[in-house]
Length: 541
Image 1 (cartoon, rainbow, N blue to C red):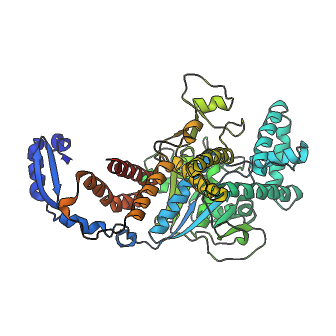
Image 2 (cartoon, one colour; image 1 turned 90 degrees about the vertical axis):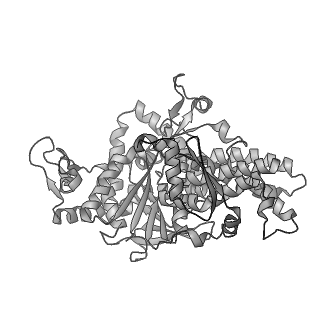
Image 3 (cartoon, rainbow, N blue to C red; image 1 turned 180 degrees about the vertical axis):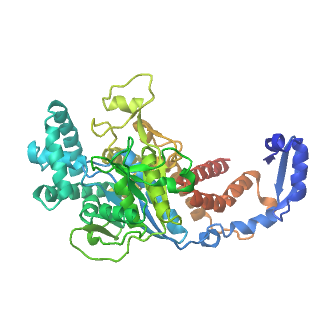
């Protein structure tokens, strides 16, 4: 049914008149007849014509438009001083599914993970292990151990402000490179990243490339980008006013910025330090081939799916634009970085308006009031949630969540499958655990904040992956038990419950195509959940 009263105000007509007008213009062999009633245009389907369409519904290649672009999807990008928490996992799951959606359309996709191993967080780790006598060896998983060390270090920094000078000294040495501290920092960072990857592999997330900030600095990517911008007269040094001494990006050259008073953005402050967006601009130039690929690469490891994971390095192979020179780059970065990302996007636009640099923004994950209390976080009773904080230790560790969920699901699998071998039970429980975490993070629209509740995540009911997989297993079981599946269905034998199910199945090509265009995994989640509900209602009746 089409509600025509929604057009009445704009068209200044009676809804029934609008419905009649629409019905006179709509022609399709899939529609048997139309009826105007109470401002609605009701459609009655021609099932004899519709049923043949159902036979090809799983032949995805026939109705998905194919593309042949080279696209980089960069996601995760967690600082190499900590374990993966649930907020990082949202980023990684979104990026992973977006990459899979793009591959489905026939694109060549490079999946990258950017590692900021020169930031203050790594300097904090060096301080803890090298100068505060924090033991480097532990029975704990190393990234989880560093999380604990990060919190402890910050407590000491608060009590001893003079340590901040030591942090600055360490940071400077890391950025300069080619010294003992820089080598040690890279070693620590690689050790953390190896453990982070184990967590992500548990979620079926894999990569093509690790890009290290320290390698970007060694290759002087920013200096090359700055030289390029100067040659193109896209930056200038300000001589007067509040930005005196700063180098600014000339966004005023873009049409949409020409009427703005303060359009030009600072890239280099008057003291010579770079703003956050400056390094990102240089890195984006490399991605899109504006700067040549001068990186060297090595295989970092072979992942559990058998795929090589490459990494930038100091000395390795030259791979001549294997990873860069992309047509499109999709950068999965939370919404708090939108301002900086807009500067990067416009910098690229100044150089080449045809380049497609996308900031895929998503909202953060916060903790529910109940979960915050369980973590011992003091909060205002009137607030429904609290933002996570690595420094304070306020977060949900994915390894911990995974283990708790796995144990709960394994118990349920054993209960429902008496006599099943232990290893088989564990295999099923592992798949269900992975699916549960992924679905929880994908079913919510990316622009909405997820208020994470530990109890709800551990629930095995309602709109969860387990419910969907249970429905799928139920459908497979029916097909298995059926001795024969009729190819030629008689329209007269199709009941209303079956028609409702068939109508929803017919929407699948359109839903998937729309989700692919919009890069919105939650649209597929919503469709599947509704389909599961319709199927279960049909089955139970």
